[in-house]
Length: 366
Image 1 (cartoon, rainbow, N blue to C red):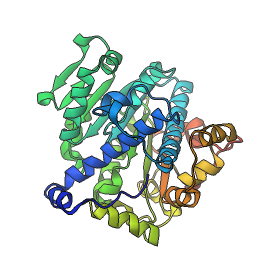
Image 2 (image 1 turned 90 degrees about the horizontal axis):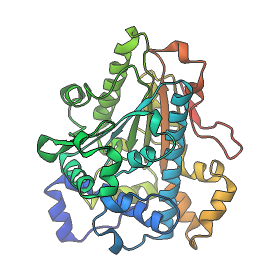
Image 3 (image 1 turned 90 degrees about the vertical axis):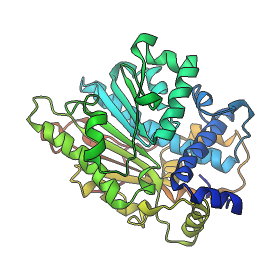
């Protein structure tokens, strides 16, 4: 959650030779942050240690990073669980497609929880260098591989870059390429346009050009709109977590520190404020889109007993700095009901974060 520290000159030169390596490193940073938050008691995740090399030797992160990681996880967990809950109410098992999934453990947490029966498919897409390492970690870990099902139903593909099981699919690709060239062959036989489908973008679109990210979202919109002739058309939802509003002095520090690691946040430029974030979806004619900063979520949406619990875990001295960081990260979510207007009166339009009093909230656009 903190702006990364500048790297030594020798490492900067090495990283400039492969810009994608620097982007992939941000996933390692996030995995280590999550591992730290789990070890400190902020989060419960028995799977993350299997995806972090030498996890038992990793040092804890500062309290500020632990708190930020907790708020991020709380927000996305809440929205995903709400999505699956609505799918359950509608008697429609859902699909989740995580783009730029990295070392995420969400599939395993869902598959071992109360919502497993309502998950039809879970697909993860990322760079081949990421998927091959994750596939190897899954095969080496009995705890991870057992969740996928009987060994005879789990297979590697594309020389170990991809992995398939009855519900879980790990797929290699470069999301910056034209979606029409990569997604049909990857997802065509996996996801159904007739099932409610949730897209997850956790810190991925911010590293892509606005044009590339827009094309990616539009491909899914077109895919589900083409199902309008189906007797049971699906609903498309999406969640984005990333930085925004980087034009101020704090944002410039974040961008400069990342530039020193050869990472550019070109996808953040069109979004100078939280009010502009819903435009990511409304420009694609989503029925509803809302956004909240992580600071708003921490202050208004996390129950007070839970805030008291995490406050007791570590002493946090940098409250002002924490608020600055949380003010530059946001969760944006949206629903596209256009192919299925008859569903507009049910739970999908109410999907979202709820305040500690149970009321829906968020900056909205249409």
